[in-house]
Length: 267
Image: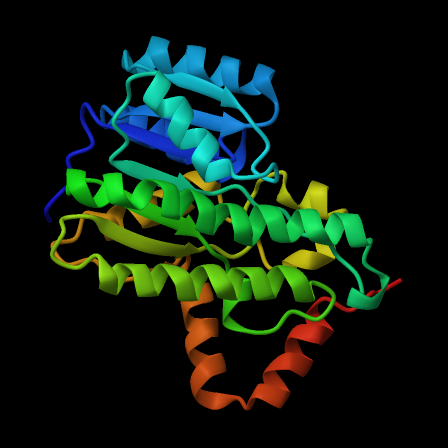
């Protein structure tokens, strides 16, 4: 396998305070990449940064910023420029979901969900992709979800945002061929992160056994290490099987009803 040369590179990671974002920071730092950690809770970022510096002796920068704020891509590009950093790699991981019928969604919370899960992903990607392509030796990973592969009743907006992320990323994979930039949409299923605490219910897991963030990150990096990596990957063998069976064997009507039963309110 052709291992991507992360050593000495700077990797900007959103949603880096916990879960998959922190997992990417740890595994990339172990490979010699100096992360720029982006999230809202400054204390968590500082603690993670101190640990990465002590363990791996890499340069770590902390940016306490909410990706829901206006023009996150422009703001982060300006910040990294002020720090004198070239950023050949970006991990767009920040996201959250809400649970319940769409008609009952809080309008402000729905706007925030779209801002974080869609607008920020596109805005940050657009702000950095010129630099990523110019450097020609890094990666752009956008974290999608198993929810991207079928509509999600009771998480309708989240499923739609992740379908957007998957489609956008696969298109950027094609546009970036021949530049040296490796583009990947990562679709985990349920993982042992704080995601479901933010959602407010474990029903959103659909009864599946959550994977460890470290395993999900390893799947992404192993895919990027391939000589000719694919545009998207689903983390977890059972998740890949479920997605394949859903596409090949079930009608859209049956798939939607099946997913709806998995997340139905048992109470």
